[in-house]
Length: 307
Image (cartoon, rainbow, N blue to C red; front, side):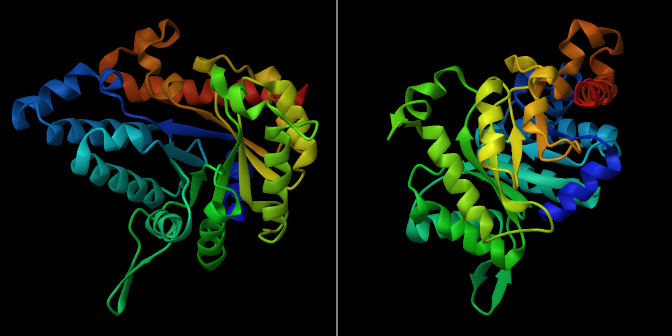
């Protein structure tokens, strides 16, 4: 799957991924009002509004981008109907030729970790049949449990030729409370990065491992160090735009050929119509605003990489 992701990044010249995080306050009032009028102010209606919102974003951007990244918490908040929309969103994105990175941040051990891996990346056995459930191409994983927690995901990835992005240095302000602590003279995030690189050695694609890493855009100097520690690891970079990450700060996450990293933007794209820069589009044209935000992000990052 890493080969497919790299090929799509090359084809689109867009090292970006759109985060589909359909918070209710991002969804235009027109969509919500229409759905609520038909279904009432219910969880089912909220999930339907999220689906309509997602579909609009995907339809407006799929030809520009290589991948989407739905954050499962934004769907779980609407209960079972929300999870159905998560599944539906993943399937629709794949129909449109997009790679799907399931932002699930799972982490556990043994059979529990295996069940997570089967649900999101593999197949679950029901009698004599096997079923794909959410069927993402990649999933994000929390490595806090160590190899016991990650190995079931590695096993499923090897069988299904899917991939992971393992949390190494996250973009949130308090990440340093644990991740920056020194262990044997090194910050913990470096030790995790080294381990991710080792896990990846046994799971190689043509050039890159299909075991990737999450490294936040908000810590560019740490990203520079981790790029050197993980030369064959693809890096998923959250934190661009709304969280403060700038394109010029991200150049060291990439190799000289412009590959090696994929940068995420969520609300900066899906809620672009709320940004003064794109206000002329209006709420009713939220998807067109998202498309323009994607074009601007691609230009921003590629210009930074070309300098």
